Structure formats: C-alpha cells, structure tokens
Length: 134
Image 1: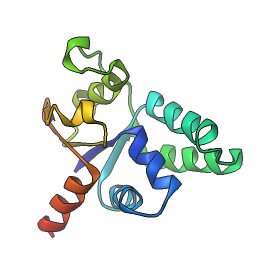
Image 2: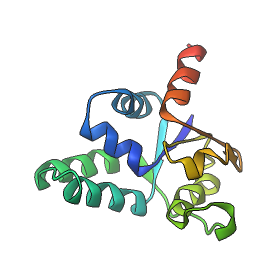
Image 3: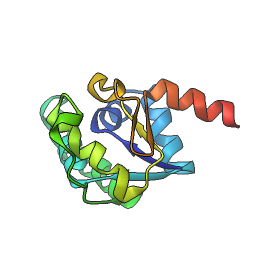
Image 4: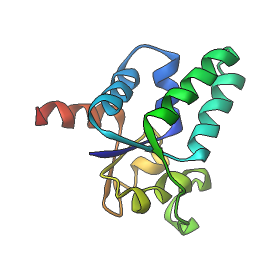
C-alpha cells in the first residue's frame, strides 16, 4: 500500500512511544511511504523549535525518512479543497504517488475522508484497518 504520512504523525512518532510510532514503523516495514520536501521541512522545524530535539537526532530522523520514502513533488491542489492551505502539499502527493492512504490527525484533512483515490485516515483508523486485514 502506498501511504502518505503527514508531518504531525511523523513528529508524534519521534516524540513519544505509542500509536504514531507503531504506525510509522508499520509503514516503513510493510508499506510504501511517500513524503515531500515540505513535510520533511515541517518535521525538522517542529522537532527543533517546538520539541527542542537535539540537532543530531533531528538530522538522523530526517535521514531515516529520506532513505525509506519516495520524496515526490506534490501536484498543485485547488485552495478551496481544504480549509488549511498548509495541508495542500499533503493532498498534492496523492496523484503523483498513486497513494492509497493519507495518515493524519489533522481535522482539516480528516473531514475530507477521501481525496482522489486515497482514503484519509487517523493513525488509529489506519492501524485498525491494517490489523483487520491480517
């Protein structure tokens, strides 16, 4: 399955042990992860500035994500599609990636439920869906 993980899910995976960490590990091990430079930049910025994660750790996280994901350029998405313009880059990855799922905790994205061919799921909904499929 081709999966887009938004920045906040990746950040939560790094910041604490729990569901987001398990979801990111599952994506890295069993699925095809898709990101863009904008998502990587947001992860790096928030880990450094908001969570005060040491620079060497942040560098390693970004290296790990780059090494295990396709980094694509998002397509342009009509601004009226989503309430938060910052989320357009995530939606813009769906077509070039042929993504099956966007994993996010962002209510502005979750309210859409689907974009193009991709379902938009919370980390819990993704986890539950994958577990039922086993």
